[in-house]
Image (cartoon, rainbow, N blue to C red):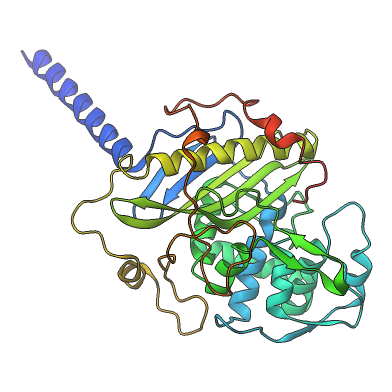
Length: 380
């Protein structure tokens, strides 16, 4: 009899565990088209995780490193929404590096002076490595000192599986995980200047040398308003993205990361793979948003109230802690948003929706041809 009771107790425990696991899946994980390789994570800000796939071991992140660089710079030199910031002089190293043919750079000359905000644009939009290193030296006196600040910031944020050895991402010692990068994205996206920069499609290059275009190919599509890309042979293709989705009548911010696509392959193939997978994830989020996510029903706070409830107090401008609601829908494509404003949603075309509505991983090759032809000249 005691054995029978024990079996019944164990069966009840298993049922309870299954019910708890099922409730967790319903509450925090959507059936998204996850990539088969590397790692990925998606989070609905103010609600919780929509899922994480792949072993969360630190991997090289290439130019996604610049998101941490911007975070550290803006903590040291916070800017208001309309502030250009202090003037920074171009040093000899940044000028000499601008002639490099093996990395992503912005052409500058020694002795030129630019406001901090413009240099942040040069670093985050066309992904200028020489500008990232310049800002590191300007902020901390040397890149080594700046890297120490980067690692201290990662520790403060609880990014326990991240480490930084440089400010731009060329060094394979810059490593992180998809989950850690969403932590960073959630912190830095509270800064209004950062949000405005990463939602901007292009920036005029110095000396009338044309436009430095964003490396984010989905910007202005499917609600995407940022963030950053990173590609190299060791790191493969990597994207950290932010988009707005309507969830339960509330427009919420969604953050996502796709890492380590086609590592060890050519950057062309890596970029093609990561953009194909990222696009499917973003489209799936938008398609499922109205009724596919379990949002706590008891009167969800509007975005300004949510920001006040969850954000740490901050006396400095910039890191105010909130995620403001975007303005009324208008397309971003073809023009730059006004400074300090969110780029807003563009409706998902009915004929472009993915046929993969389930949660099964997508084929690694599907959709890559769409991007491969446009990748050869792309930056990270």
